Length: 106
Image (tube, rainbow, N blue to C red; front, top):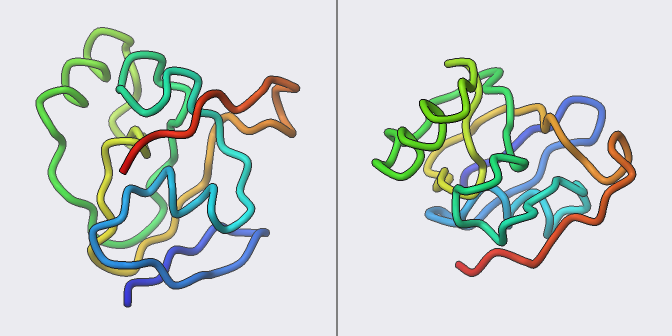
């Protein structure tokens, strides 16, 4: 099984093909996902630190372009974990004081 590393938070195994946002949430990382994983709010952004990431979906490309998101960031609701990766969540409950939002569907 692939491993996801979040510096300062740990490393955990993830079922291959699982959405990164769910993998993070299921392992105690309080990442925001205010739109419920629909690539609309972009609050689930993560910085790609290491590893191989799946290609951007058309929906993710549009969200990134429309919102002027930097190219080293991805939307965790659109990333499927397929290999070992390391990420840094940008917006969390702890650093924003906001509610995470509705749980994204798989």
